[in-house]
Image (cartoon, rainbow, N blue to C red; front, side, top):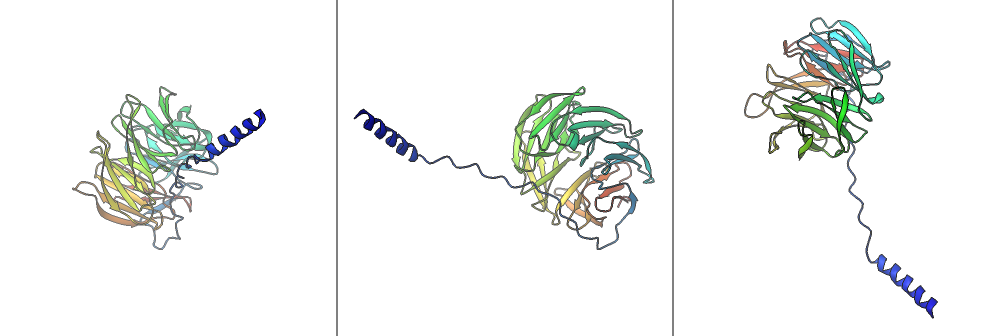
Amino acid sequence: MTRIRVLLCVVLLTAGCGTNPPSPAPPQLPPAAEPAVAPPVARAPAGRTVPVGGLPEGIVADGVTHRVAVAVRNPDRLVLLDAGTGAVVTSVALPGHVRHLQLAAPGGPVLVPAETSGRLLTVAPDSGRVTGSVPTGSSPHDATRAGNGRIFVANENGRSVAVVEDGRVVHTFTDVTQPAGLAPVGTLVSLVDVRQNDLTVYDAASLTRVARLPAGAGPTHVVADRRGHLAVTDTRGDAVLTYDPAAPAHALGRLALPGKPYGVTYDPARDRLWVTLTARNEVVGIDLSGASPRETSRLPTVRQPNTVAVDPGTGTLFVTGTTEGVVEVIPAP
């Protein structure tokens, strides 16, 4: 009799568990937005082209040293160009491939997140000398310097953002899924998460997250303008989104820009945003000086224009042609 009672209890307990359905699986996040696979060029590029090496992607122009740094592969190198002539000045061997470059400040150094090495390098733009190398995490994708000197590094496959100070990681944020583009406004640092499709704002002084906002259908990159606002390329949503990161952080507007907008840079002297359209092999100039962003120019580029830089002194544009291994140099439009 005792055995029968035990078996009955087991049956009842099992049945009782069955009345509570398992918790639903969390919703699957969409894949990260990517640039379009660019078609063959239909029009001659607006500028002249300079061969730089395989698969160039990641470019930045320094108005102080008059150097342009561009990352190439096979082998992984940082190529330094003369901003005036476009001539190759020197190249620097890198420990891994790179997709994004920023300047820590006018005059440098160049922040070089070498994704396949897990390290952030700093390179002097005038000489090409490597001035620092710090392990930051898995797949450092982008890096930016906050106003207080701390450097934020987005570890894309490491689901983290590392904060570097005095040559070492002093803090790591783990509240992200696939961190990508970064931009600073004073001591506020804004980050695009390409899986969560949102914009996170961190305080570089207190090392805390202060805001998180939706950022369209598939954001990829972000830059700051001279009034402290942000422009985000919504690659999947074919738009540029604008934000004010100051508390309370909030969205400002949306400018439709069909053609898979991806690469982005800002010219502070002319208050102009430049965005590449990877599906159209074009670069678009957007005037930010008015009440709302306004398209001012549209220029043909080399094939697969994934990244773009502008010389703040001259307004000259530099566009990477990833397919053809070149940089397009466009005099100030």
